[in-house]
Structure formats: C-alpha cells, structure tokens
Length: 392
Image 1: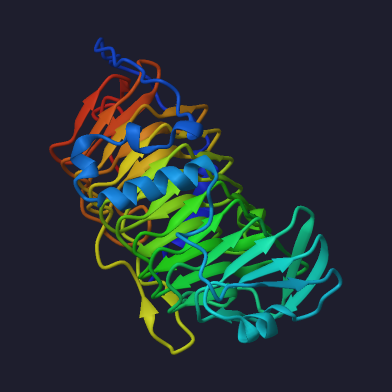
Image 2 (image 1 turned 90 degrees about the vertical axis):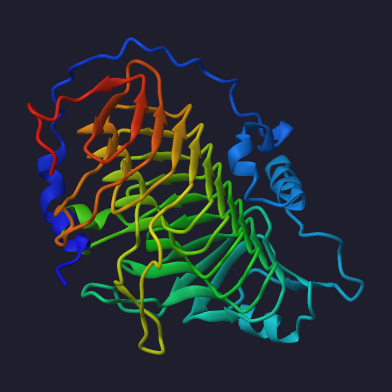
C-alpha cells in the first residue's frame, strides 16, 4: 500500500499555512485545576471513564504519577545486579542471570549495545542518573512494511519496568528503541529516547503505564531521508495510560489505537501531528514475518490536560473511525492548520479512512477546531467553516 509515511513526508511542507479562523463559539468552558501529579491523576478522570478500570488500577496509576515506580511488593527473591560503566552488550547476560523481579541497574556512564536484547521475564531495569545506553546494529527502516527491530524488546514479561534509562544511537536512525510485545502492565517510566525512528511501540500490551518520558525523534523525515518517525505508538492494547511525556520532531507524536486509554499531561511540539487518535495501519513487520496493525480504532480515550503546540499540521487529530473519545482541558496553539481536527472520510494517508464519530471536544475559546466527522460534539473554540475550508 502507499502508506501514510511517504505521503506525509511529501505533503507536510504544504501544511504549514494557517487556515481561516471563523465562527467563534460563544460557549465558555470552565478550566479545571491544573494537573498536579503529587495528587495523582484519578481525580481528573471522569466517572464514565473510571468504569473501565478496577479500583486497584486507578490506585496504581496514582502511585506512578506520584513517583512510586515499583510494581507492587518487592519479591523475596529479588536482588540487584549492577552493570558497571563502559560495559558492552552486558544487558542480555544480566537478564539471563536475573530472577523474577530482580533489579538490573546501569551505573552512571556510557554503555554500548549491539542488536536486540529481549526481556523475557519480569525484571526492573534502572538507569542511574548519567547512565547512557548507546545502541547500534540495525539498518534504517525505509520501505514499508517496516521491520520492528528494537534495541529492547519486552516479550511475555508482564509487570516489567524500564526506568531512568537514556537510550541513544550512533546510527543515522536506529529503527526502534523499546517494543512491548504480549506483555501486560509494563511500566516505561522517566526515560529519554534520542534519535530513534520510533520511540516506543506497543503490541498487545494492556494496561501499560508510559509516564514522564522524553522522546526526541529522528527529524530527518523532514528532508525525506526517512519516511516516518513516531514517538509513542499503541498498535493494540486496552486501558493504557500515557502521562507526562514530552515528544518532539516526529511525524506522529502520540499515535493510539485500542479502547479506554488515558492521555494526560503530555507535551507534543514540533511534530507533524501532536496526538492522533486513529487505527494504526498494517505497516509493521515482526521478525516472524507477520505484518501487524490495529484491530480497533481509538475508542473511549480520555485526552485531557495535554499541551500540543507548534506542530506542522494539527495539535490533535481524531480520524479513521476513532469514536466516543473525550478531549477536554487541553491546550494548543501555533499549529500549522488546526488545534483540533475531527476528520471525516479522508484520503490524506494514501488510503480511505472512515469518519470519526460520537466524539466530544470541550475547549477554550481561542482554540481552532475543524469538525468533519459524524455526530461529534464541540463546545468552545473557533469552529472552521467547512464550506470555506473543505474537508479532506
């Protein structure tokens, strides 16, 4: 298929212009108190969304937001394995020798890794402040379907944690930093991912917690050297929470499928699209040769207290059948076309996508909103006139 990747790269330069701002709504939406992580996040989740979570899930999300990154009680057998600075390919051996729940700690300094390391058991990987894991050993992903060749793959390893690690690469673009595969309740917390074509991809990773990471994507898609760069990609996974991350220089900052997720307190800037509620198309290939894509479009996602500014196209895009999502108390400005777009039937990615529907947007008066979908509800903002600026 002609993927969204190549078409986006060719057309984004044309999308830097602003659209006519017409039809200001007079409805005022009261702003809620600012998100305070010290108080947790569950208080900011409406009751209708809390229904999808167990009480224990909400308590866990609050604990992570407050800075308690460990998962549950420490196992009696758990112990610490230290990787000293200057290490080469030491992580695989550390995982092999680790018991369930053990902590693997990268000491401050430079560490080198070639090829993929697979986490196949519950472990807690920690990077001390100043610990850098420099990754190499993979070709650049240029032609779809793109091979998923990660630096770290978490596979069948429920409850594993990666915390405080700085991953980078010496190559023009390492395809993927972290891949979650068939693993529930994984925590990716407070990491920095630099210069990767993809920061984090989730495939069958229900209840993943992705908090407080900084993703500086490889920006060479703007010059056509690579077709695509993405920050966080949820292919398949329900009840995922994406909180407090900062993502820049990608085509798609946060790209979600799945049901009942929470996107809260994230900052996306300098991307093509800041956050996109969508259905990830079948454009990724596993080592087995299987090509994967999202089973469902984004459904019942809560997008709240995020900031998405200075993106080439839209701050928030709801497209490809995304439905029953709630966007509220977000901030957006200085985006190339719209702050929030609810798309109708569209061909912009090289294949037809169905309209968004039954979504709700509550926003402040100054935000620019375009609604081409079905039965969406928009309160507040500056609504674009679709007759003057046709849907596409």
